[in-house]
Image (tube, rainbow, N blue to C red):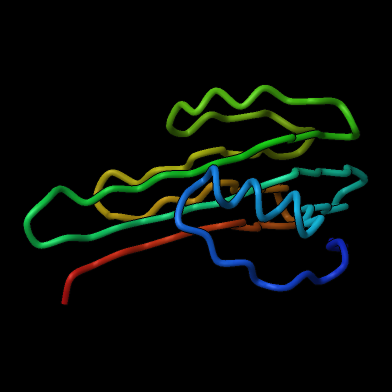
Length: 124
């Protein structure tokens, strides 16, 4: 069973720095307990942008990531994978053929498959 921390209001932001500041001002945290593990973060954000005259862009921001209250280094590299007992967390998950980015993808085999802060952008 997965449980999430208390619901918090949506706080719009233009970039990671602004999102981080708004999260601190509004005391917004991510706390997930699943498969006997506690995963927390101060900020998890994904953003995608599609534009007609410039390249598509995707960005993520993850701050204060912990697993069972142990700090985890977030490198910013695409598809950074953290192995967990019975699963994994993929940070800054990128797919080659789409303008989609997922800041945090938690997979516990047979238990949970959670995409946290995912964004896609397309021109129509």
